[in-house]
Length: 252
Image: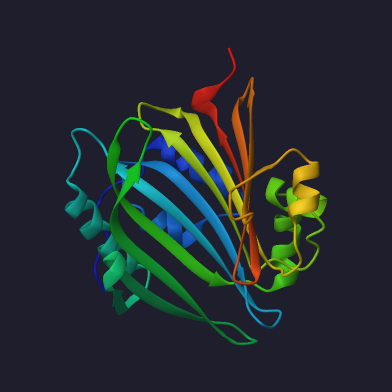
């Protein structure tokens, strides 16, 4: 088993991970090389056909100006994954993503964990930032997901639209300002439901503007904390509701 590269996650990024996942981010934080800064975090929950689902946590990392290259960060993360017991099991060519797997055995059952590494580009308002993405996927039954999902703004929006079934997935993202990592640039929440009934009536009554096809609805509002944009789109038997708070567009 390889030894991890001797790098320590910078203090600010470690704090961001702890605040994002106060119940512990374990393997994900341990796989993150330092001389890099966390510029985006993501939580996603996916619900299967049964009560089983999956919880995915992800971070996007930008290299420090005087730190190692993106390839070196990938190599460091790869070595850290090996040191944590993750073994390579595949490669997703469309995303240039390496897939690693570890099986944690408990009294009740064996629980696989998947860790993925990929280079990428994060599109910011003024630039495209080269990043390394690390995500960790673990099994998560719906009764564990439900309290987290209920607290989200996207879930509250869905409830006002009469979308009451269990969602197919939900995603929560936070984007930090690379120039000032204490600043949040944007927060995005999205939720998807299996849904067939028309939503035009309830949405237009709430001030949403529809596109020409009547399948996408949007409204936005400039607030003191930023520009809030809410989008609801219907396609192929499902509805996706998305909320984006762009803090770079605060009302002055």
